[in-house]
Image (cartoon, rainbow, N blue to C red; front, side):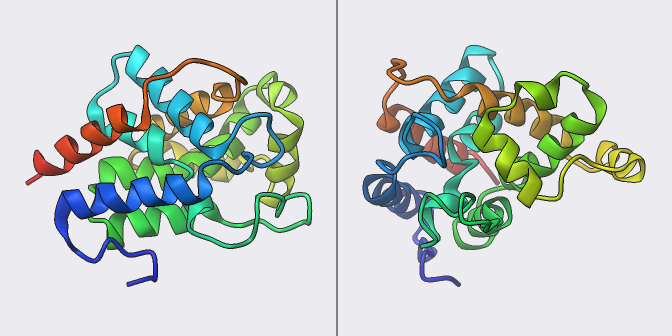
Length: 196
């Protein structure tokens, strides 16, 4: 287990660790955007909730960038030409250390590939990305090839990842009022307790 492990203490320990991560790192700017990591997470979760998505998609929206919170590369790594591979680090932490189900960890793992997919299949999508997201896209490999598009379509949870990508792209509004972190962490704990 990584140093960021929830120590296998069950849902309450996971929620405590998530609260610590957001307390410690959530106030940092979200990679070149005008919102913090916490504001971005809360806005993404709120968008999922407003669309009446199931709890696992709301939790994935809240935690899709947890990989940014568990590394020490700083919030300007893209500007320094570094791909922090946060989607893989976050998904690994969620699945292996925290014990989340694949319906939560897999859309998190796939939310960067979903951006590359959308850039390949939607002519307007790339142009509408923020400057920071366009920069990170370059570091992440650019738009998918035709073969990569076909493979992504066949990947389990790819549709959830595309929805998550949409919320991710919209969750960048300074000063937007959202429910509290505690509101969503209650959902995190409930979703873990209800999982066999």
